Image (tube, rainbow, N blue to C red; front, side):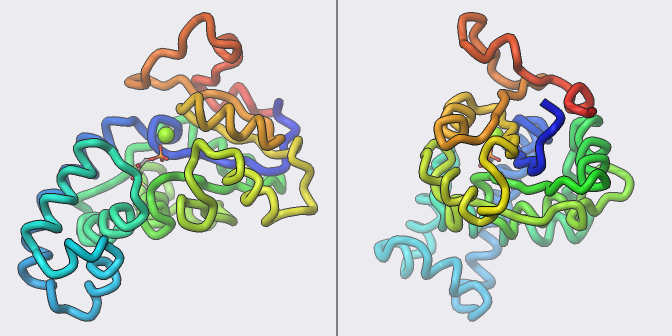
Amino acid sequence: MADFKVLLLDIEGTVCPISFVKVVLFPHALEALPGVLERQWNDPNFAQYRDAFPEEYRDDQGALEQHVRDLVNKDVKMPYLKALQGYLWEAGYASGQIKAPLFPDVAPFMTESQAKGKKVMIYSSGSVPAQKLLFAHTDAEPSDLTPLISDWFDTVNAGPKTSVSSYKTILSTHPDVSPANWLFLSDNLKEVDAALTAGMRSLPVSRPGNPAIPEDHPLFTVAVSDFSTLSQ
Ligand SMILES: CSCCC(=O)C(=O)COP(=O)(O)O
Ligand SMILES: [Mg+2]
């Protein structure tokens, strides 16, 4: 499995614990939201985030805030929510209040893969700016892993993560690389299935805190719990 040319990584439940997203990032954004709405509602720098929301929320701070809370509570991956979350996380990362806890095998595997001439790419429901913030502020050494990453995909430039067409869109960005030479790693079995259907190789990732992969699932026996097992 180690002879891939492109490593495509999911984030939540794959490179970092689900709890970091659900218990740290999402609450942090909700805590920051009221103050940002109060201070920046008419700020031109905030306009792109506010105007991305459905029309009924663009002129009502309270309605927009409640809509955000509803979406987060349901873990709805709407692109306008993901863009706003990335904006709300920016100050937290910059201040050092937020640092991404990567599983210990992740940074060494990314580093080794890139050093061996493989491309390392990210595909997450989090916005590309949010992905770059996360990988620029990790608990690895060095903390900034963005130099290792060549491409960034989210639900805006690729599409929904459980759609086969999204993986075909991602494949089309590097037509010189055979789909069989891509390896997509994700905790989400539906995402893994969609990637496989698109022609990529893909493996489910089993991490502490992830929902258990059913023992009768066809991919149960090949689930990855330590990326070092994928090294040549
Ligand atoms: C970029 S960190 C925030 C990740 C996020 O918002 C999310 O919904 C996680 O989705 P993933 O596709 O990375 O499992
Ligand atoms: Mg995930």
